[in-house]
Length: 331
Figure 1 (cartoon, helix red, strand yellow):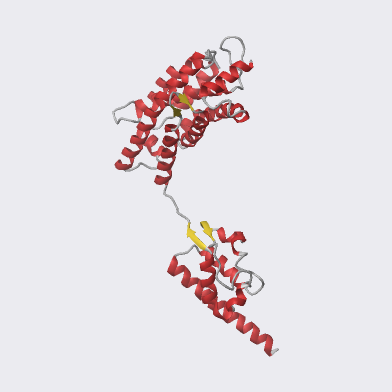
Figure 2 (cartoon, helix red, strand yellow; figure 1 turned 45 degrees about the vertical axis):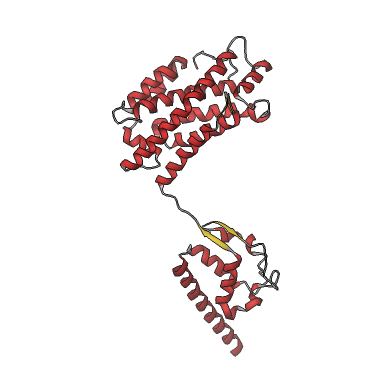
């Protein structure tokens, strides 16, 4: 009985000492509490066969941290010995230090909405700058850039939801044939030419609805629409209201190729365009108005993106026209 009371008493003192060390670690290093407690959990089982070789495989260590690493070199005499037996639970501080040396945790970097919005714009701009390879459009880079742009479009709010959905479905059409033969479709021209020679399209310029050509045709029209919309409404404070700019751009780039139903639905969705400042804030990853400096930065990046689009869209149109793939039938 005495021995049992003594054992429980010792365990209680050990737990109290451990709790003190954990709280001290949180205060000193501002660790994520869940991760510190995860390490503490290891300590409770340190005398039961847990070795330093097991540490990187313990999944709950990852909670609250972006990454961890285990040094390749191991100190002499360590490796497969149970950690609890190296120092014993009587010296918890030294045991905790040992585990801290074995697992180098990096606190997760939390990004502000502002930084996240800027990152999306940077990704899209960077991706599109790699699309043109001389006079050719690199198909893989084009699809990658359009996928990055799709994320940005989805952040634009309800007014661009239909445009984003349309872009997403056409991206799927374009990706399927390219993934089947990426070398054959390395450039946009070679991909379109390969499809043309396969006999998938009907006589003249009537494209197969599920073809890469059909998807890429509508993606190009969508980017041309967006270029006009953003250029005439967002780049200058004296520009058109986004709602007016969207209808004008729609009439020019999309309406001629839409059937009766789409001509009713699309303008209705575009009528919900917010004012310029709200639009810019959305692209900057914010729900509320951004600072003048941040707005200037967003506009500068949008301007650079639109300048990148122009030569791409021109080359894109030339490739379609030279292969007689400019399908003008109403959708």
